[in-house]
Length: 376
Image (cartoon, rainbow, N blue to C red):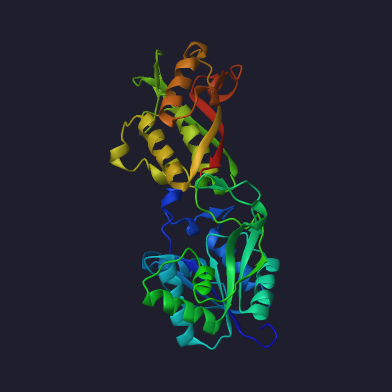
C-alpha cells in the first residue's frame, strides 16, 4: 500500500510479438537466462507499495506463463488476454474488480523488462497526487511530421507503467468500448474523458522489446570432442570431404569425427545436450547417414533456440593421412552447411608424434571450440 491506498498491477503479456520473428512470443524469450516476462514481473513483486499482480496472456501460453511465474507470490490471477492490448487490459480490469478491492491500478507491458523500482514508485506517487500518470522520457531526436519539424522540447516518449485511480481507468475503458475506440495506450483513453494525465519518471533503458535489435546480444562458448576408431573397408570422411586413405572411421553414421566435434561444441554452447541425445546410434534412421545432414539439423536446432554461429575453431588430430591439402575444402563445406562466412571457420590438423592411439594410427580425434550469439 501507499498512503493507505491499495495498489494492484496488471502486466499485459498477450501479444504475439510477430515483429520479433521468434518461435514464441517475445515476452517468453530469455535475456541472460531469464524470461522477459519474469524480469518485468519481478520489479513489481519486489516493490514495497504494490500489493498484488494480475497477468493477462493468450490462452495458448497460459500454462507456460504459470510455470515461469510459479514462484511470484503477489500474483492473484492469470487471465486470458484479448485480441488487442486494450482488450487485454479491459479483461484484466474486469477480473481484478471481481476478485479484490483496489484503489489504484498500474498497467505495464510484459515486454518492458527493464522497469525499475524508482520508475514504479514515481508512477504511484504521481497517480495518487493527480489521478493518472504515465511514465515518459523526453525525445532526443528531431521529429518531422507532414513536412514540418516539431518542437522537440514539447515531445515525450510514453512508456509503461501507467497508473490510474480505479474509477478513472474503469470509466475510460467503458467509454472506449462503448464507442468502439482503440487508443495507443491507456493514458490516451483517460485523456478522452477530458482529464489530465501527469508524466512520471521513465528511463531510456526502459525499452519495450519489439524487434531482435532490442535484445542485448549474449555470447556463449562451446567445446566439443570426438574420437573414432580407424578400420579397413570404410571410407574416410572428414569435414564432409572424402579423403583417399586405406582405412576409414568406424561408427553408426559416416563417423565424420570433425563434424561430430563441431556439432557437440555448438550443442554445448546452446545447452542443448549432445549428439547422442539428438541423433542416437540406436536409431536406424541415422545408420550410415552423412554427418553433413546431422550438422544441418544441428544448425536448425540452434536457430530455433535463438542463436547464430559466430565462429568455429577446430583441430583434427591424426597421424595419417596428411590433411593440409584438404583443409580449404573442409572449411568451404562447413561454411555452406552452416550459412556462415568461410573466414569464420578455422580447421587445423596436427599429429601426436606417433604417441598414443592416434600416433599408432588406431583412430582419429577432433576438438572444436565455437562462439554463438543470441539473435533474439
